Length: 388
Figure 1 (spheres, one colour):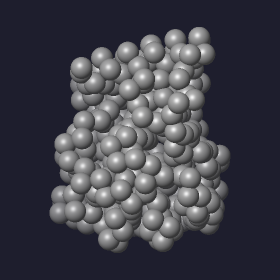
Figure 2 (cartoon, rainbow, N blue to C red):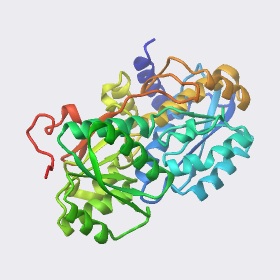
Figure 3 (cartoon, one colour):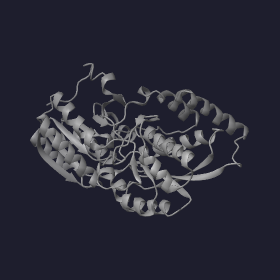
Figure 4 (cartoon, rainbow, N blue to C red):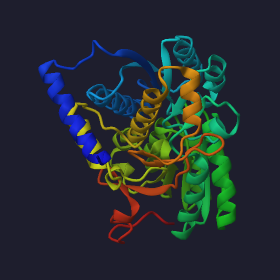
């Protein structure tokens, strides 16, 4: 049976089962999984989308009569803060009834928690954090990642933006590991692409007022400001650019590519460019079926750009448990060998650091939505980017 048909059938089965109360739960062993992400604060939009998508995967699996286990999701809020992330990671990892985890959108949290998962032997699959060091900076076999990294996002950003005619840049990045990584990889690839960075501004992720930085940026007259930060920073920077009179184009990687940025920046978000490792959900074979199932499940919030990765991480883990049983070490060993796994976000192939290999894509904010660049009116020259 094709996966798309299976997803549709399971969706219908889940709804019927819920409606009739006929889910055969009593005869099966219950297995707990953890979901950890930012469910409160300025980065909650992708976190809630990831949680909902993971919950959908669990609901559909529990409605499958051929499944060996009933899965129970334990949801924890890391608040996109490393110290909180370590606390909830420790809580999940020290609970031996939890077999595996779908973990982290924020890179600063993802890198802070890898030691915890390794120490407790809890296999996890990262669903959104893109700092390369989370997988490449250690040899912890408990850590896997289905989404890509900022290496390929930064490379694509440098190549695409210079081809659009942007040659003079300013980088504003937060001082977390995430922001410093964004600055590092984008700067390296921009130099190779022929662009020039005329100034770099490291800022606190909680900084509210950018008058001083934007006043200096106005004097420098860059073609483009590159944001190396998450949504709250991107929103505040974009909102204050017009007040100071900065007319440069704004771009950022996937940390700002979510509904929170569009809602926070409002009309000023129009034309902002972003780069994301995932393709548009409707471009995937199972994409429309996923969206239909998500809508039927009644989730009010958008799955957001990384929801499909959270869903894929959950199905990958549950398939592993179905094969080897609810045993952390066995699940870890099987996840380590993942090759040609057919998922919602395409085929998953882990390299020798358990990192899935993906290519990045370009998006632009258009009429309050993130639009795949080739499908946008900007690519069709019906609208123009800002170019000084």
